[in-house]
Structure formats: C-alpha cells, structure tokens
Image (tube, rainbow, N blue to C red):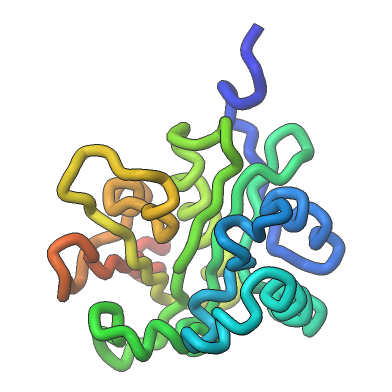
Length: 199
C-alpha cells in the first residue's frame, strides 16, 4: 500500500497566518527548521541573527505573522504541513540587498523566494517544484509581476539538503523560471515573469 509520502499529487498550499502557526511550529520542530533559524536569516543582520538565534527568532517570526504579514506558504499532505516556502516582497528581506552576489539585478520590483524546508521523508520527491508554482500563483494574486529566486547549482550532482535551502536551479527551471544573472558560478538569479505567462 502506497504511503502518503509516495503520492504527493494532492498537496494543498496555504499562506502562513496565525491560524496555521502551530502547523509551522510542528514542521520546523524544536530546532526552528535548521539551527534556530525560524526563517529569519534573510530579515536580519548577521549580529541580530546570532543574538536571537533559537527562541528569539521564533518570537520574531511569530510577531511578523501576528502583524498580518504573510512570510510564506505551507504545503500540506494528508492535512499535515510537510513543507515551507518563504516568499515576500524583496524589500522585506534586507540581507539580499547587502549581498554581493544577490544584490538587485535592476530596479524592477520583485517578490523573492528565499528559503525552502521540507520534512524528512518528503524530500527529493518534487515538492519544491510544486511550492514554486504555488508561490508564483500567490504572488500573482497579490498583484506581483516578477518572482525572483536564488537557487544553488552545485558542481557535484548531489549536495546535502541543508546547503540547498534556497532551492536547486533545476527545480526552478522545471517550474518555468529563467536565469537573468549570475555573479557566482553556483548561484544564478532566476525570475518568473507573470505578465509574460498570463493567458
């Protein structure tokens, strides 16, 4: 009998609101996804992040959600959250602006997809691609025109999941994103132009 991990065609996607906060806590677990991050890495300076790593980051993310801001989407299988995708207007993610490699390409207002977290047992099954498509649809509903991502394109065929938290370039390509710039051999900047895809 196939497990629900083997059949992910029925995934459902929802924006993270306070009604779903407990689902995020359950998905991220006591380590806050990875190393107490709670998906705050892109929103803080390095010193701020280190200072509040763990519980401080959890409280900071909760405060964002309580304010009514949507920091990303949850993917559900069988009624349980199994994956996360952080997506927000780029100006809400100041670490991108400070990055030498990921600084703005141009003046175009973009929404940025900066992080994925997939529950163990559900990885390497194509969930990232589905999350990317759901994120594009969400941005479209918010009136956004361009969605940007910062995946890795590893030199080796396989890399540890923890280093691929921004997604793999291959998944972005499969979801319809195209490369627009590359300042580092392994870090393309990729975009999905919603207006061009409109029917």
